[in-house]
Length: 440
Ligand code: SF4
Ligand code: SF4
Image (cartoon, rainbow, N blue to C red):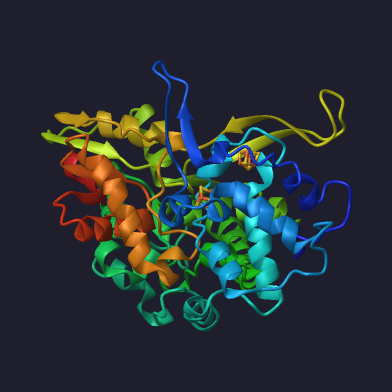
C-alpha cells in the first residue's frame, strides 16, 4: 500500500518546513483559553507544566527543534541527535493542547511535525527511547504492545455472549483493542461493552484471537514501518469482514484505536477502497445514536455526582482543517478554519440521560481539556511522570465534588487511576459503558 506520511525533510512548496517556520514564537500555545464570559486561561501543556522552561514549552519549542533539525540558516549542518534532544521529543505527549491554541498556519501541522521528527529519529537509528524498544518488539512478535502472547488476547471474552465474527455474519464488529485485552485493571471496559450491547439488542461480533493491534502506539513513537505492517493487516481483515461477513460498522471503545482507524489509516492511498461501505465509530457515538433513535433508555437511578474527562484522541485530535491551498482567499497555504469532528456531546448527553446523575464539568474541558499524560509513549518511558500528571487531572476533578470520573478511553482510564494512587485520592475513574451498564 502507498502511505502518504509527511517527512520532516520533504521537498516541495508545502512541505512541513514551510509551516513550522510560520511559528511566531508568540507563546499562545502555553495556555488554554476560553473566551467566556468570563474569559479564562489555564495551563494546557503537560510537558511545559513539568519541565517548565521555554525550550520544552508546547509547540513553540517543537518548531524551534524542527528548524534546528532541518534548515536553520545559522546552524545548518550542525544538527546532532543528543540525549537531551531525544528526551524533549519523547516527553511530548502529542496531546494537541498546544494545537488548539495556535492561530497561525503552523496550527494544522503541529502534531504531524512532532511525529515526523520522531519518524526521522527512528530512521536515523536514534529513536524511540530505550524504554520503548520492548513495546515495538512486542508489536513485531505478538501484534500488541503489551508483550502478551497472541493466545490470551481473547481471554476477556470467556463466558460472554459474543458472536465469533470469523464464523458468523454481523453488521457490527466490536473492535476491543489491546488495552482491555491485556491490561487486567481495564478489562471491564470490554466486558461491560458486551453487556450493554446485549442489553440493548445490538447484533455484533468480535474477532477474538484474530484481532490485532491498531498500531497507534508504534506510530506515535515514529516506528512507521511497524505501523504500516499492522495497519495493512487490519485493512485487509476489515475488507474481508465487509465482503464476507456483512460488517458495515466498526465500533471501538478506545480513543487511540478510534483515531487510528479513522484518521491514521486514511493516510493510505487505498483507504477508501478497503473501507468502502464501512463506518468507524466510537462506542460513545454509537450508543448515543441508538439512544437518540429511541432504541434504549437508561432507567435505573444512580444517585451520584460525576465529571467527565475528554480523551485527546477522541476529542480535539479529530478535526478537518480548512486551508487556502491556492491562495484564492487569503494566501497560499494559509490556515482558514476547521471543522470540529471531536466526540464531545455524546458521552455528556448519555451521562445526563441517567436518572439521578449529577454532572459537573471540570474547569478545563472539551477542546481545552487537560491531557491525562499517558499518550505518545510517555506512559511506557516515564510511568512515574505520567501518573504524576494524571494526579493533576484528578485534583481538578476533585474540585467539582464528583464521586467518579467518567471517561471513554482505557488508556486515560488506567492512568487516571494511577494518578489517584499518587495523591492518595479515593476518586476513581470508570468508563462510560460501566456507568451505562449499571443504568440499564
Ligand atoms: S506554535 Fe503557534 S501558538 Fe505556539 S508560539 Fe508558535 S505561533 Fe504561537
Ligand atoms: S502536544 Fe501536548 S505535551 Fe506536546 S507540546 Fe503540545 S501541549 Fe505540550
